[in-house]
Structure formats: C-alpha cells, structure tokens
Length: 304
Figure 1 (cartoon, one colour):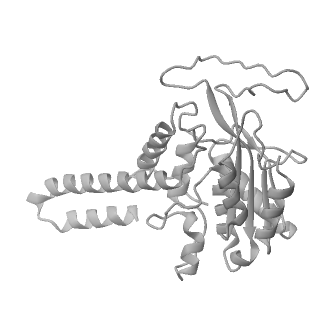
Figure 2 (cartoon, one colour):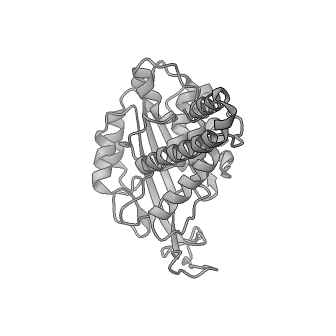
Figure 3 (cartoon, one colour):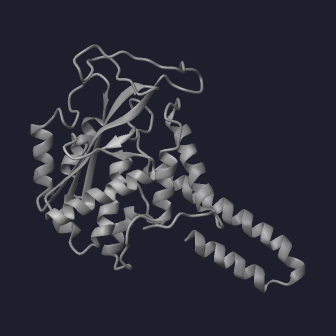
C-alpha cells in the first residue's frame, strides 16, 4: 500500500509540467508522510497490548525455546525453525535441544476443549494465581482466551524484573535468594523495572487453518509468539500477516507470510525503551521505527 502511494506520487510528478514539479513533489512527500504516520500510529495503537496493571509492553529478553505439538514431524520442525528465524531477525537466540520450552504451540481440531482444559487444570502455567512478579491480562482476558472461537488464540504470561533483568524476590534457579541489581537507578524518564515474557501459549484450530500456506501460518504464529498483541485489534486497513484468515475468507490472493509492516513492528518493539515509565512512550518508539522503515525510498531487507 505504501509503495503504491509512492508510485502514484512519482507518476504524477512525471506527468506534471516542469514549472510545477518542484512544488508538487514537496506537497506529495508531505501528504504521503502524514498519511503513513497516521496509518502506523493507528496500527500500533490497535495491536500493541500491555497488562493494565503494569502499563508496559513486554517482550522476550534474550532466548526463546519453541515447542510445537499436533503436527507431523516435518511440519513441527518447519514451524519451530520459522519462529527461530523471525526471532533471530530481532536479535533473539534460540536455545538448543532439550531446552525448557517457553513458547508452547498446540495445533488441534478441538481448540476450545484444549484451551478450557489448560485453563482449568494448569492454572499455574497460565498465571491464574496472584504470584509475585507474574503479570497477565487478568481473569477476564483468560476467560476470553478459553472461550475464543478465533482460528488462533494466544496467552502471554509476563514477569516483572529489574531494569537489568534480575528477578524480583523469590528464589533463584539454584535455590538461593534472588538479589535485585541495577546499574541505572529509576527516575522520571525510566522505571526500575521492565516486563519480560515468561511463557506464551498458542492454540491453532486445525480445522480453521485448513487450506492456508504453511509458511504464512508459521509466520502468523511467529508474530504472536514474539509480540503480545490485542486479538480484537482492527488491522484490515494495512498489509499485515494478522489479516491472514480474514483475507482467506474474503477470497483475496493467498498471503505468503509476514509483510514489511510486520517486520517493522517487531523491529520497533525490540528496539523500544524497555523501562519506559508508560506504555505510550514505547508505542511512540515503535511508531517512529516503523515510519522510518516504511517511508518510500527506505532501504528494506528482503523478506524470505
């Protein structure tokens, strides 16, 4: 869409008499720039989700360990590899074989039954109880996860850690007391804490996913694995893999995977200020990065 706007603007400039080209080109640039900023700002505002109790957008710290279940072995590996590839693009590492899974992906023809069973029987896993430092979207959000009819549903469990990533209270992995260390004290422009993902649960309805390109589905799952997104956000006005099911149902050409918008969003998320005092600061950071990357003429890395 952005490239289309740019092409139209360039074509208009070429067909305009020489005496008017300079003024019109400047006006076109302003219009395109303002429109892009408006679209990006709306997109980020629609999809960025942060637990209300903390008001900070979370992300993975350094490493992920995806586990996929419910698919043939070859497809399991492909989806896990695709998530790893997208994670590497934003500076994350994938832990090796035998790691403790923190991204749990289930593909099943009975998604509602599985979601309800997890919520009812594995409440610690979904952060149901009020544990120190554990942050979720709350009981109402968990009910929405359990009762959703969406083709893909996700649930993020976050952890409040110090600005330097140290656990707050509780015990360390070796059984000792956790010590909070920070090299930068909190102030008006930064908090002494941040939000890290602890685990993510994703359930894919196999029936509703039938007929999709598997690479596109894997990229969709990667997107919601790496970012905490609002499942009710309106995204149809922009090119994003989050429209995968909507466009399929509308008979639009099949999507092949993440778009430049998606990659720009993830890049913005993983370069935003982690200890920002409020979510709005992180939203602005993400928006700024996206605009810089999506502006006509900006250098774009090739999408695989």
